[in-house]
Image 1 (cartoon, helix red, strand yellow):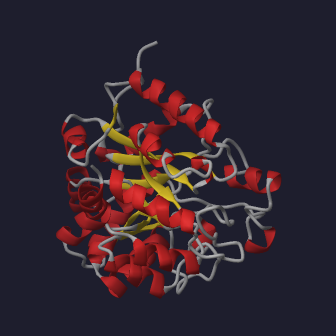
Image 2: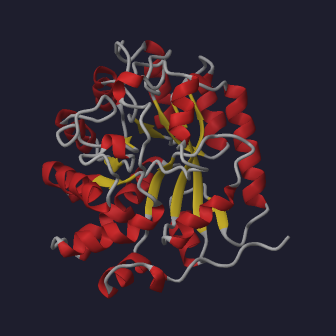
Length: 343
């Protein structure tokens, strides 16, 4: 069966001509996709990212609810799919592969893990996952694990195992990621990291009080490592709860005002909905331990879509941002971290 047609033309973006030109030319980086890690996932959905001019995407292949065996199966299925679609996608290994993929008209892909249960209690598993294409890993996914504390738990802090994992991540060249992680643990991780660390998809708690969001001290600590905070597109974590482009830009501007435009990017956490209910609603019903109803997860959640990325470019221009700083937010900041960390 032949591949789907090429991406939609940039002329379809409902933005100014200046924004269209800039967004098409810039490296556009989405640091986390939120669709469920499962071998049955139809990755043709990635056309939505390509149509929005997105050049790089990190795809979740496992989180703490799943076993390490399931994470490996997910990776195997996804790798196989990408190997069958080399005209549109490329699994990148080095940071320099990403601009090369954009130049070739392809979308660059790596994987991420949300939480460290996939390591099965062994720090040496970091090297295996790195070789399989995982380039960033969270310390915890909402709840405590062997490495550290989650943002919806009695945060136990960074453990001795967690410190060994940091050493391995720094050694092999994997990004240390503090999204979904508790305050106490994240601050210890950022202090211990020997390379730039990130919050791949987290929003400022100053604009929306929620357990998944992060306080100014965490944002500053991330910036001190040379890292980046990726703004999340889930409405539950955004100021207006509606996942509008304007409210995402408010979060971007807040982080930039706090620590500078060098330390903010985008991690949409987008998952296409198959109907009236969104994927996270389904998951929260199955395992409320990880998604407590008291935090609002039982509500219908609006999520910003990839098509809003050109609109973010447009809104930033309208607010008087320089093209250089917009390019940083769209992708250059995360690329800088990848160049510093990946090996």
